[in-house]
Image (tube, rainbow, N blue to C red; front, side):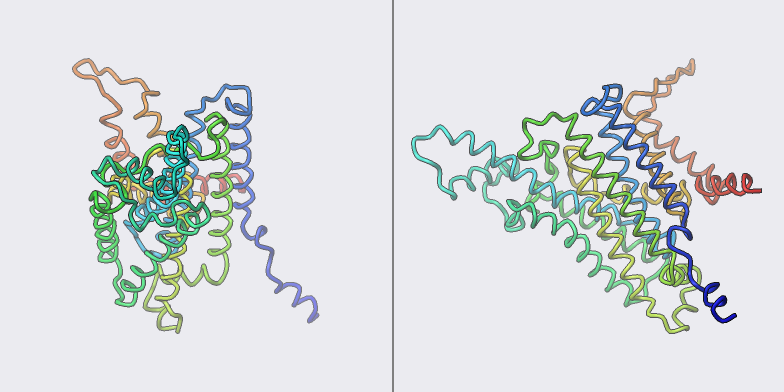
Length: 398
């Protein structure tokens, strides 16, 4: 009898408790595989390289939306600054990409000289090439590790993580919550963007970093193949991120952060270190956002301070709300739907709508359309698209 009771109390395996993980992995694998087969790089050429890049970037946006859902949907922290961490990750990898590409150009231009160039001459030429657009020629100190791929990858994790750790420690230890915390995160994002707009920030000011789609050492590889490689890299990152997030929210840790979201004073009264839990989630999601940005901007080809504007983080919250916060797959669905529709409406794939007295140009009206969609979903489907899927699943089970 005792043995049977122990058997009954044995916890079920992780995947058995979270069947949505297997479903998500299967759908992600199928989409990525079908896109690869139909691509120009490895397949029959039905899907263009530009659309493969859109898919890759969409998966990166799904990853940052997943991070947003973890910090907001599960922990209750409405951060309006997570796109800043996304941008920081992009800047870190962008520095290496731009430095190495410029270095190749400089070495090629100096190869015809009678005497081989010195290391100092090479660095001076690289500095002039990169920073001449802002009236400079010296390589700033923050570019010290720009020639090291490993170091910049480490900075993709460390810079957003340390930034979030410092900000979160100051905010949470002061017990700033609710709308006041949201305003603080928005102010942080705005301050960072304004700083990066300055030419003396060391990151080329408003010009940003460009030419990031040209991967050093892969000049002979066509973009059709590079884009598929990034698509798979983005898919793997999203899959691992989803697995990590599902594991976090499915156990005791997940119960605690949901308790913090629903009734923070009660969780604190029970003796749990609320600030520590919030700081961990805030920092972890910042790191995930940084990784997403590092995969996104080589596919986009350019990054500038406008990418870090507070409005981007507000859009991120809208994506999660549309998909259904508190549901990991909902955040992914919301980000994917909005991203793909945005590309279609603003990229010219959807024809303008003649109304007789005027012509509706989707490039100008897309954000209005998105706003109306957000209001309708909030009013008639407050649990988002993910909630609608849950209802359909329940009906089928009946």
